[in-house]
Structures are given as structure tokens and as C-alpha cells.
Image (cartoon, rainbow, N blue to C red; front, top):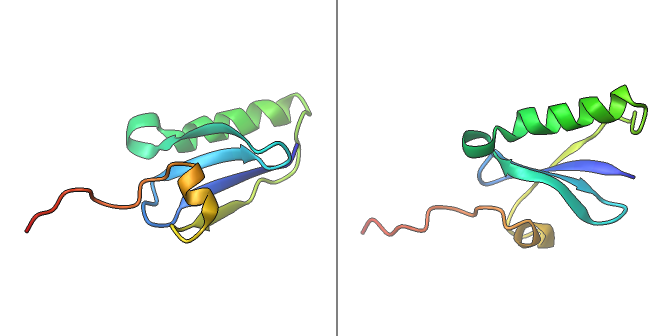
Length: 83
């Protein structure tokens, strides 16, 4: 297991915890709707408590130019046209 937190570089409140060794998205959401920071923190704390994963988990911010951005279905911006 090799974990990383991907953050949406265009909408900072959105994140995903991914196991890059399998490509599996373990948790995903935003701060407002899902309190994703707390969910990720709790998940990692449980893994560390049971010695299942003890490494530090880095955060990498990605933008729409990264292929993972669309795979994670990150929010790119406002869809409304105010003109």
C-alpha cells in the first residue's frame, strides 16, 4: 500500500485519498459536504493505530492538465454563465 492525498488545485476544498499501488480511491469529497479532511485524518489514524500503515502521507495538488484530475472527477470551476 502506498497512499497519497490528491488535492484539487483549482478548488482547494476537494481532496482524494488514493492507494497508488492499486489505483484505488479510498476516500474522496470536499470540505463543505463531506468534511473530507476529517475523514482522511480518521482513516489514516486508524491505519496507524493498528500498524497497518505508518508512513507519512504526502499531499499533491493537481490541476486540470493532470490526467488524474478528470479520473478523480474533480470540480474544475463554475458551470454557470453569468453574462
